Image (cartoon, rainbow, N blue to C red; front, side):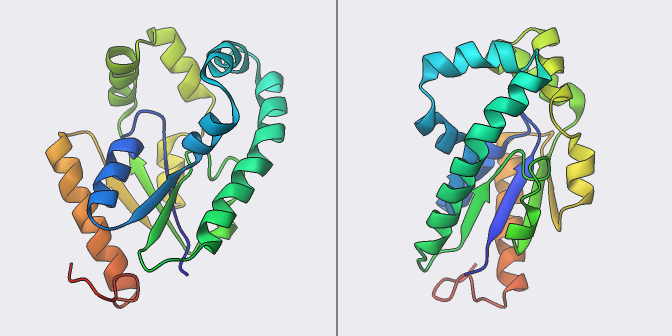
Length: 184
């Protein structure tokens, strides 16, 4: 099975894009969902305040969680199936997992759009949003290391169109092998 990863920055639209991919017949597994299954919501909120303010605490937590997340994603790919699979891994390059994947795509948004989304939709202060952005590799660096880049500074409809283009591109890359019984 071709292993496909999608990365991107916080508030770039990976979750919405993932839902569009599922609508188009692609299976997705989000590394954040794996973490949510491992760490209860109340503990995640408490930890977030600490780890985004303390890099050493963040590294210690990641050292415990990342091997579990990586193993779950590997097991998911090993389950096989007839539909293409895309693992959504926000920190793909930061954790150096890129060698695990045949194709890497990246969802990017402008920094101001990311901050706007985090403050308006997630209730972060600008300072909290900036701290989260500072804790991750800049999306332009991720895009430069990816084979396919999806820009998301527009509407949901525009992102849906980008999802369709991506699925078509995947089919072209695999000469239809990812979608053997379905016309794109």
